[in-house]
Amino acid sequence: MKAIGKGLRVLAILLVGAGLLYAGTGMKEGRWSITAKIEAPGMPMVIPPVTKTECIKGDAWTPKVGPVENCGNCRITEREMSGNVFTWKEVCESPEGKLYAEGEIVFKGESFTGVVKIRQGEMTMTNRMEGRWIGPCD
Image (cartoon, rainbow, N blue to C red; front, side):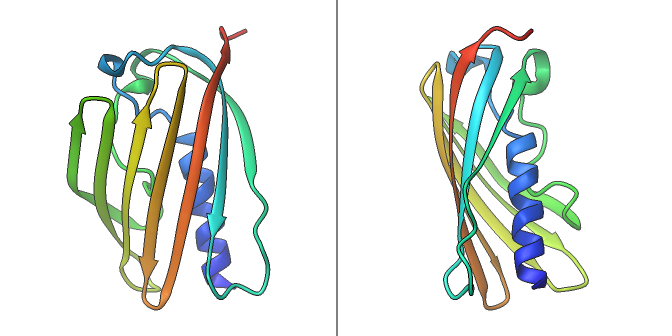
């Protein structure tokens, strides 16, 4: 059950922190619909996709930390922006042990896709996300 809770916390942070974008990618400021789905092999249940609408603008597009921020004592170990692709790796310390995450987000102007792979002990999860611009912020 702790694994499910950790996965849902990471998913929430991914959705809230979907502003892992650089202005240089050509991404538009405004209202975004972001959907994330957790794949967790061996889980007794399927976690349904979660969709969130968020206004992203200004420096929210600038990556400052990785998506597992506030999920224990985390630090980015690698981060790279190459063209329209942002990749990173991070490690988090928690009472349950180390959590490793690595991800990739591909930006396409009015949309993006991403994958984050998370490992903690024997537990592994894959978070797949996609976002699309739906208009200006209210």
